[in-house]
Image (cartoon, rainbow, N blue to C red; front, side, top):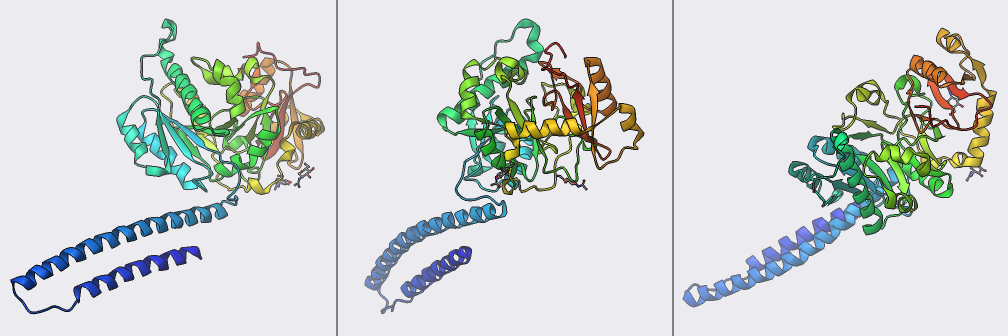
Length: 431
Ligand SMILES: *[C@@H]1O[C@H](CO)[C@@H](O)[C@H](O)[C@H]1NC(C)=O
Ligand SMILES: *[C@@H]1O[C@H](CO)[C@@H](O)[C@H](O)[C@H]1NC(C)=O
């Protein structure tokens, strides 16, 4: 136990200082008189100097010991989180503005679950110049790094988009902050969160395990912690916490991207609505993200800029995973495109075709999986509405869709909402 040694050393240092004090104070004294008093005064001055010097030396020593101890503690944390000291550094970028209590809530949870400060440095980027928020972030000391978006000038917004000004500010902030991460800090990858996200206990474990897959497969461009259809009644909360999927829909809300992707997107980053811009075919270029069955993030704040109704109806109801999954101990190569697509197509094809009526009747055998087929946009909307699935599209891609298929879990049944076998790509006119 290195910790015990450090403690013993500290005790030793304190004892040593006490011995020194006693020795000096009990120096033999001589008869009184003004000469003697002068001598004594000189001696006391010397003693004071000596003690100050010693004190400086021991303070230095104590600081060094504290650093060693801190290091030891973070290593213990690493052991618990099942990751090794060597390996990639995955910084977390937290985007913040003027919500002091939201920032605290986000940071508290990130810090609670962070297995190692060295492996997961947290950089909080603050826009908006809001002082209480800045002070809240600074109160975390060296546990996080604060950077501040310097351009607080009025942002140019087309007249008819005035009420969407928030989206313009966010876009400008993202661009600046990501440039800092990749150009100034020179990191290879980043996990982006905003100041309204709760994270799951295995949030860091999830990203650590999927990072090599993201690197290895050029048809992947992100890993997201979010399932757009992650309501408790649409996922296998108990037995599905280890399940991961590919999706053609960019989920955002706690996501990882590499420096290479930023080199591609950064120079043409849009002035606003960055997430829908990312979802456009020119940017996505047929690439997919990894997403979990059970969300590893949940949003707790109605954003000033986004739709309150959408929050109440969907975002708020996403179930946050609470069962730790040791992803780094699992073999995740099945997520790489060739392997995944083969298994995925087989599994969808092998599923028994049923109607929405069959599903609703509740008499299907739970041991096998099922396929609901849609042919038209109206078909799709009718089924998604009746099951509580998201029914919107971006550039023709439905949320969580992979090759047109929405995979979910409903009343104990594994279901694929799937196009017919003659499907030949997303239809961008579906919205
Ligand atoms: C739990 O999920 C695994 C696959 O992850 C599956 O093999 C097993 O049958 C499931 N168990 C139950 C009770 O659903
Ligand atoms: C991981 O799984 C794949 C099959 O999906 C297999 O080919 C590979 O050998 C496995 N790797 C390890 C380290 O077990």
